[in-house]
Length: 318
Image 1 (cartoon, rainbow, N blue to C red):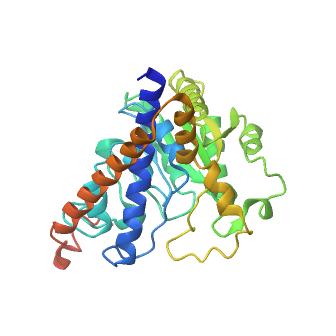
Image 2 (image 1 turned 90 degrees about the horizontal axis):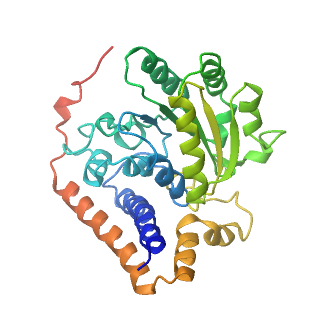
């Protein structure tokens, strides 16, 4: 088997691990083993996989509430993710953070945030601290297109630009600000121009193209490490599920999901690998391996003890 196919199968497995995790989370939410609001990232896996492949252990990642896949790509064990979402003692935060707030800083994943765009100022703070603590860390803030209309995001970008902080701002533009098309929310749909106006180098890329994402993140990381300051990446993608589990998706035009199913990164890479000579059996095994891993991890987490209610007041700071 040639190197291109081997590398492609590794990428395909990395994306299938996220997809299989999200689909298992959906099943567990439907069965009510997971409770509360849950947001899935099906169709956006390539951005997380390609970005995390470039980050160093010391770098700090701040995701949105659609962050399960980012955690997997950053190396957080699936059993600990499932455990956290199901309120089990095996969860990365002892079952206290749930889907919206879990974090695993020991893996460089500094958490999700249910406040839209709130990861941006935290990432700027982490990058500022990195200037003084000798860590040399670069901070990555991930948010959606809707978060671009949050004042805290604009202020964080301006702060990072003024102080030349090592922050990579990544906007996952999936065309929808929750349930509203981004084009109905802004006069100028080129969101990267907002960064350019602040003096931040910015690019717009195909977020479903692993190579494009890797290149953009690599160059941004190099700029941050060398002291040239922040970068902005607008990665165009699509989510092929609702904004949240239970979303009726009545806002979608007819035929959109069918068209997106051809564009999403897993289907796209599978076609590319098949054209390069990968067999259907190889491609199917890659998917099945990821599904088996997530089935095993979820079953193990389900068997773990639930967090005792009397411990709810522990680990709280005011």
